Amino acid sequence: MTVVERREIALVDLLDRLLAGGVVITGDVTLRIADVDLVRIDLNALISSVNASVPSPFEILPEPPAKEL
Image (tube, rainbow, N blue to C red; front, top):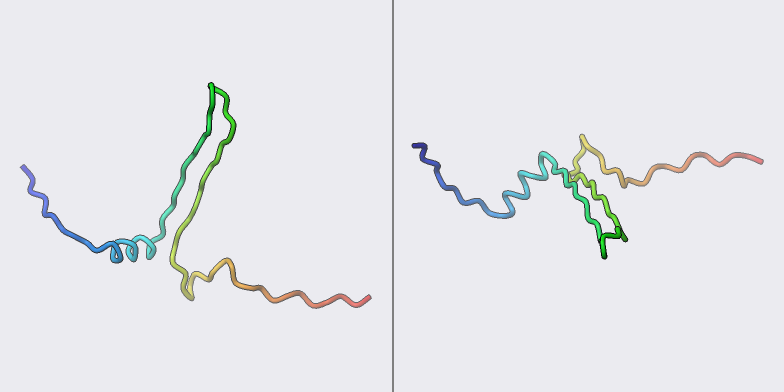
């Protein structure tokens, strides 16, 4: 018989560990009435922390130089 040690961990620490490595969330939701699919939603999300080695995809990129007419 194997004895498993029980450890308690704070929610903040758990979120910190998950975001450090990244989390992928996937799911499907279908709204159906009388066996007729009305709405289908597919979810694919990557949640991760952002730092200098992994820049944010939402950074404002510099605008290209204006073309002369």
